[in-house]
Image 1 (tube, rainbow over the protein chains, first blue to last red):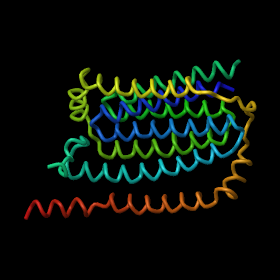
Image 2: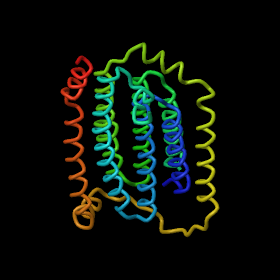
Image 3: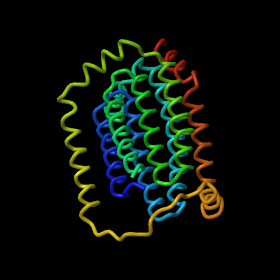
Image 4: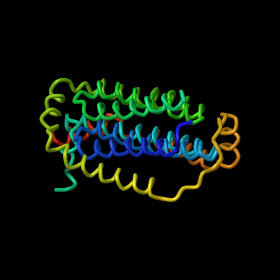
Length: 100
Length: 176
């Protein structure tokens, strides 16, 4: 059983990698991938906490995060398809129409 | 001891694959690294004594969600022009500031984690899928139903967004 602190540090690092990805990349596919990493890091924290206390609740939160991730990806990829059809690019800078 | 070594290897693979995934210029290549990341996290789940979460991670995350990504990437077929554009965007100057910000965030979290007082609780054990299932359909039955409603909303939303006529109407507007 790995020490909980080390699992949490792994989750933090993964979350930070995801945050860098969201900030740096301008391709919407990569932004979505980075969001997946961040959500997975959160799920890892829940499972680690559940394992530490020996309770199934952590895994149930993981299940709910899984459902959330699936819903988010389905809607986001629908938006990606619309974006590719309308603008011919996946660059998020191309869809800044609301700002102007 | 074996579990510890496995955990550090899996953790290293997770981070290395995640960093490689977000630095790729080709989306399909990145998705292969995403699969590796998610599988490594599944190993961590297993080592934490949560075999049910590990199985779901492989089936739903590495299976269904990444395949959904791959379908969209291949359907859009962006090709070399997109890769070239990504290469012009990914300079060192763009990476520096967000990486430093994330490093600061990590530092804060790490301080909160190491600096605080911790109580030790009983040594963990394997949590069987049976326990998870019993808790899921007794204590958390409302959350399960809410998740079902969320998935239904996502289904309707994805269907609506994916329809072709939204794009066609736009083209008609531009033509007229």
